[in-house]
Structure formats: structure tokens, C-alpha cells
Length: 492
Image (cartoon, rainbow, N blue to C red; front, side, top):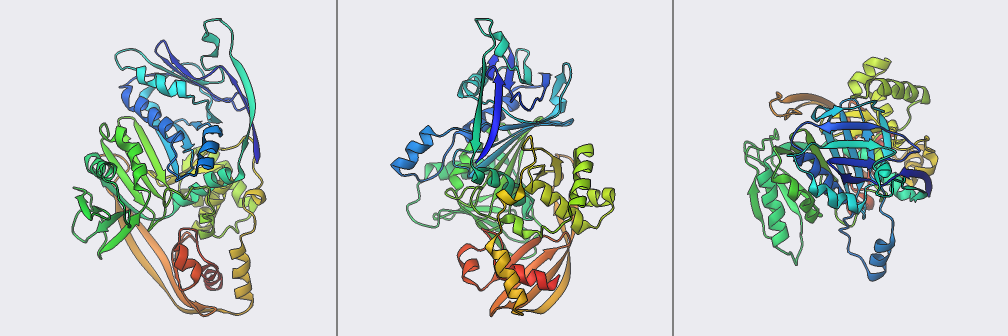
């Protein structure tokens, strides 16, 4: 367990045209501002985050359900940056992740702004009261230790504190999430109405046979299609283009969780979809004026991000501490940057910069922005964590080292490939972004298993295939197998 001290002065609430979010006084953050545009997107996004926090899509026994009722909902995390304010949270079953991103341009600040990260007292009362917010009256958004505690009817400050024991699996899942978000994948933009058609169809039809998935189809020269199984109901994502020159299919499971987005889709201007691979995490960025809601889903409903996915194994964590310290100092200064900008700033190669950013995410000191495709400074904890505690030695690393030491790895073929990927602009009206990827395709034999991996120029493994039992059972859902790790080591 990880003990996190919390002290709130007052509870979060909505009153007299103000939204008060009571933050943890141990980690003070202050942001008092008047909302200067339509309040509805912000209100709707925060309400959806509340729905996500209390949601649970697991199939539970009676004992599990009783534990769920008695367990403590972990408060969301809020970060105030110069250009945005954002909230992050896990669902109760930890299979869904939500982030509300509010542009600072929709606020007019009052008084000192204290940047930083803290956890927020997000009560059910606050969630229900958000529904009373209206654009017809002035609304203030107040984030701070006092919240509205000093405005009680008795004119006394409501003060309470406790210590939360965060399960180590929860912490590791929150950290592993960043590795999942940074994985390369397929990115495309869809109309909100088309994604809502998929969600409503799933809601209105109950499947009694497998497969219960959404099969995303990419046919060269055609718009992306979402095929809802087992009925094979095809929904064309009109205008959703892609750059695949060959037919490609990606399946995702746990599709009922998309219903969390339903209230947002009616008000959204667009949705960006990020598919990391078959049964791997997927992410959905719902864009509204001044506000974006990002939903991250694990590979399937009963798999939480807290499970031992080990996505961090996709990148070799061999970077020296001095580089990590320099990278952290630069990220603190600029708030956000990508691996190329960091490499130029701290004078290192691209692979080292990528490893530095990955390590900062593993330590809870940075977060990956799937929309901007860069990294942001975010201290998840007040004090740095001990990585040994949350990342115990993985047996796959030990098995890989034994294979290499035993001379059981043979590289049969290696070639360098260069590929251009065209993605939509970050904002509507932005020109398409062209990204050039250079990767090494390596094939070999590892202890009698035919193994195939692809390593990006950043040093990250972006594809793998093996004839071993581990891969046959899990694919890449739990990260690379020992044979892939061994092949990467020998080919380095």
C-alpha cells in the first residue's frame, strides 16, 4: 500500500454561481477563474468524469459486489498548467481512464494561480449539483484548499483529513497507463454521430454468442468502418480517412464502456480515435468548444489498467539517472515537449530522449498527451516513488538474459524501413501532420521459436510476433515475451 495524506478544508460543491473544487491542502493548488464561454461543455465533461469514477463494468460475484459497495472511491487528480486545467481519474474497476482537458482560454483568472498537481474531493453531491449550472448566469470555477468550506450556514469551516492507502496495483496501473498511451497505433477522426450510432446499437442489442467486439476495418481508398459483432452490423465512419495501402483489421472488446461518451457526443464537434492494436487499449478524444474529454479503455472490461500489462517493457529502461534529471528539469521549465525537442534541449540522441520521457512516466513525473503527441510535466505524488517497489524484477527479463547468455538467440534477417504517416491536425482547421517513422525489422530464432520484432527509431518496440505459448495466449496484451526481449538485446 501507498499512504497518501489528505487534508481538505471544506467539501467541494456548487453554490451561488460558483464551482468549488476542494483540493488536498497538503499539496496546494490554486485556480480561481470566471468561465467566459458557454458553461455546458465544462459541466458535461465533469459530470461524465463523475460517472466514470463510479462506474464498474466487471462481472462480479456477490462477495465482489459487496466489496465494491464498501470500497473507497479514489479521488480524481487535478493539474493546473499555464495553458490548461485537467482532471484524471480511474473507474471503480480500473478498466477505464478519463481526462477532462479545459483550455485556459475559457477562463478569466482572479488572483494568484498556483500551478501543480493534487487530488480533488469529488463528491456525489458535487456531481449532482453540477447539473444546476447554467450559461445564463455568471459561473466561477474555484480550485483551492478552502473550496467552499468557509461558506457554510453555520459560518464554520468544515475541516476533515484522512490518510488513503492506495493499492500498489492501482499506482502501478496509473503509471503503466502512460506507457500504453505512448504506444504507436492507428489514429483517425470520426463524426460524433457515427460513434454514437455504434454505441446505441450495442446498448440496444444484447449478444449471447461470441465474438462480442467491434471490428474496425481499414480498406484502402475507403472510409473506416466499425463492424459490430456478432451481428456484423457495419457503420461507416463518413470522412474518416486513413493511409493504409493494404486491408487491415483491428478488434476491440469491452465496447459497452463507450456508453460513457453518449452524453458528450450530442454536443461534440469531433472525435479522435486511437487504436493501439488487437485487444490492446484504445483511446477516444471527444472535442467540444474549449474542452476535451479523453476516455481510455483497457483491452476488455475485466482487464484493468492495474493488471500486469508490463507495457514499459516495450522500451529498454537503461537510461542513466543524469539524463533523467536533466530531462525532468527541462520538462518542468517548458511544461510539455516531445522526444525530438527534448533531445535537442539536453543534447542527446533521440533514443535516449525517448527513454528519459518513458522513465519520467514510469516514475509518475510526466504524462503522455495522446492528442498533441508529446509529454507533459505532472507530479502524481508529492514525494518521488521508489521504482523498485512498483516495478519488481520481471521474470521475462531474467529469462531473456538467460537465453542470450546461453547462446540461444540467432538473428536471421534485419532491415530498415521508412514510412510516412499522415494524421489529422491537432485542432480543426490545422493542416494534416506528416510523421516520418524509421524502424528496424528483425527476424530470428530464439530457442527454437520463430520471433519477429519491429523497433522504432526511438528504441520502442512497436510490433512483435512469436511462436511461443505466451504470445499465443496473450498476443501483445501483456507486453513482449522473453523471446522478443532476447532478440532485441542481441540485435542492439
